[in-house]
Length: 209
Image (cartoon, rainbow, N blue to C red; front, side, top):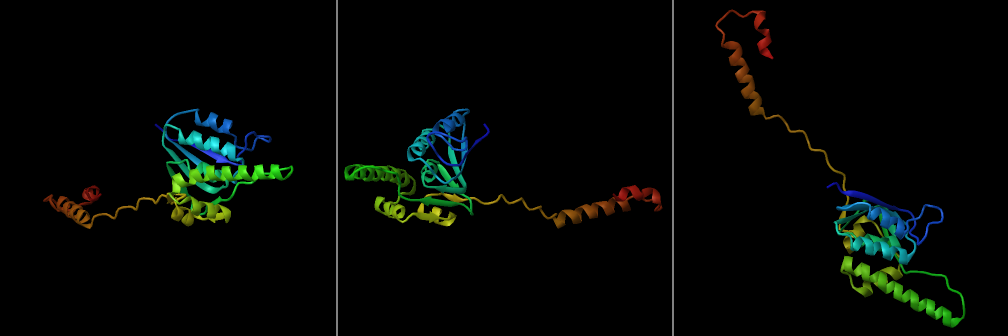
């Protein structure tokens, strides 16, 4: 069965206002349009945490093998989705970024505290995905998120966010002809040419080739 290709390009959102966002419903429709192993190409700056969590769960529960390939950037919420891949590959020129979740809040100190508590829980849920993929400790991951950590391909593999760096497929080198075989063929050709006990004439020229 041919492996299917899905592309996650753009901002992740619950709803698409300008038809240029990736929503859970759009991704679900594409994911469920076929069966078999899939490769998900990601190039996204991130977006809505809840929408990203939905897509992460879809990929985690998918019955076929899921290969994630980051060819541009997998930042913020997009990095969470990338963690759902059975295998995560990164382009040598791609980037991956993790940081703390953010929101906009309005109200008195009680409302502000609710927002702070909510963000803390959202952060813990994001760390859950990172722990499962990287095996890093929660304090280590929390520190990386606090620092807004940008990773190139090498760093992403080193820290466990990716498994391998993508490389170009090398063309098979042409095999050099075996000199012994060439010598044998030449020897046999000479024998065929020299075998006839007749005078050499141009009528035998066709035997040379």
